[in-house]
Image (cartoon, rainbow, N blue to C red):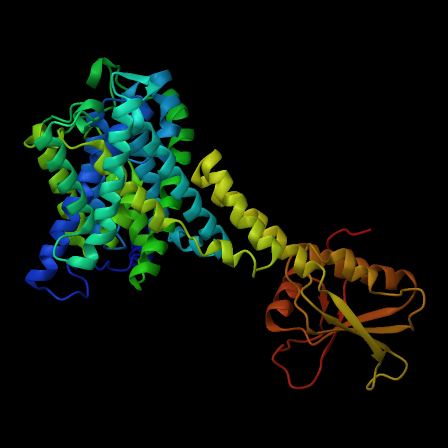
Length: 546
């Protein structure tokens, strides 16, 4: 039995494409582009990882180690080369309550469990359900995340010595000027040369000016020191004191009860953001990604990160856009970004800490401009009002709450709108039967499901109809249990009047559904793929309708 289960599981897991270059040609120029793109991403990762660590209430190295480990593992085995993963704000806002109440060791334990849940989702191929996300939800997701990225950069305009105070006077003017200069370089550099990624050129030029002229503006080092060693294995489960002076998480049922709700939420948010980013990067690069493979990669990276003192993470749309716009298309860019980040932590922290935040803010502002779907304003004037409403709704909910809630809300609203539109489509044409003299035929059009059952029942004139009624489903489908209940209900009404009702032109799926429910009264085996119309009498009392 165990061997049979393992064989079934093996069939479910298709061999992933782990090629370093995928279908890109291996040339010196390509490798240079990938490495420079990775360096640009690594520089942009530093303040993001530190900021999200502060949001979660943990040490900056917890965020930096997560960015390195999650970024490296997903780059190596992820489903979409070109995507960048790391510590994200969407996860950090959920983690802060757990860390405040129970300490960072419980966070590490939660990240491990979160990774296990994500691996299970990948093995079960649940990633395919991302296809149910409608395009208006995708537009709202992109716009909302662009706004979130923009708002996150505004904290860099606060005084590092007094985080409650905004920069003012000459320092604010200088900060804005350097941000504008960075954005100008990024905009103009591609018109001159593409040898160096424009964001990297912007960071390099502005950092050089600040260091050379000793300009007093906030730098990466003002946020926190990024100096550290290599991440080492750490088991968060047990008793006693763990990292950063907090207690370890004991391996008890009580611990599971604490971390499981957080793990489920984090796993869901991480997969939703990762899979939507995967689709977005796929649209830009014109290549499809493996959703299930990405789920497994995200889960594996989080399991490892939890055992190496990291806060976990998922795909980062901002850094992914930097990578793609800089020319990164293969696994090399993501691997390089992670290794450069580790190099910054272990060796180059004094140099990286001198980089002005204005340069990195300028890069992220250009990411916001490039990420926001500006054509959505035009789209909203041309699509149905409900789709326009969904775009705005998802955008607002993403900004006000978080991505997972926004996507779920968008999908639910879209599904309800679709159900309502289909519920209004059901109607019937009536005529006298040509094959059964005196019988009346109802030709049903539109799907019969939970939303249209009331309309379906209202189509029939039970008291005024003849003794024999034929319901023709050639242009309709019986979809769910509510539909079965409606058919039984209308059959019961005719039966109560001493009249008979039969069903005609059932498709294969409708025939199987009604047969399974026990509604069809057939004297012999039959095939719904018939050439001659077959009538089916309806058995009442099956579902207990009144």
